[in-house]
Length: 248
Image 1 (cartoon, one colour):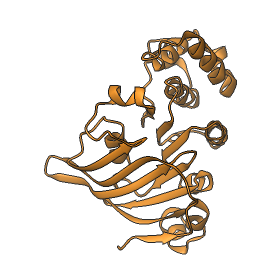
Image 2 (cartoon, helix red, strand yellow):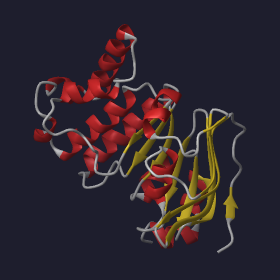
Image 3 (cartoon, helix red, strand yellow):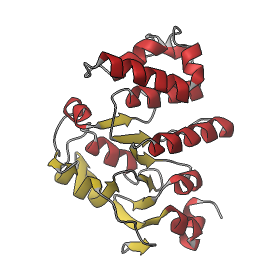
Image 4 (cartoon, rainbow, N blue to C red):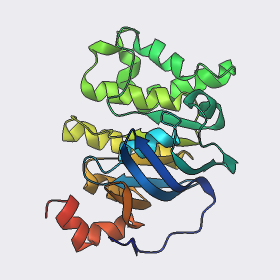
């Protein structure tokens, strides 16, 4: 369907600019020319059905997948095709679907690995304290193997580990997946707080209602192409979105 835009986007300094992004898995084209942007200080949500290409978008942006075509610019620098370890020092962090923690390492060791490219010891110590302030349960569990944490605690650890790299842009893939509603609410409250501290967020989330409530701007992906975009509030009010993604 042709792309539809709902609502006006506030003026912003563009942090991430993705143009005509195409991703293929062999003969299968997962993304057919996706164009989106994230502004400085924005939370941008990417919603859509399973298989729409949301995770592929994040993986291409974070260097885990090489795009077949298209351009990706981060803070004005062209970064398409760079590897993940080259993007982390440029201010990008990715908390993937499935969390990707190291289960046999302690909580503290997982967090320290998040800062592995940093050399500013006082800054690392301050950010560790900040993560423990955001998620106090992690401080209590810091000596435990990460694999012994509950699902919600593991998600808190995955987000905190990403924050330990001191990102300007945080990519989050399905942070609420498999979590109890109360834990999900806690995580989304913390994401709002993190954003308030200056971290921009590109969020892929199965819970479209929560994602749109949180997002300043959102895109709807449909089988590898953008269908609609708009403010979170405008998309929440859209009858088409409510029927397709909010179960109404």
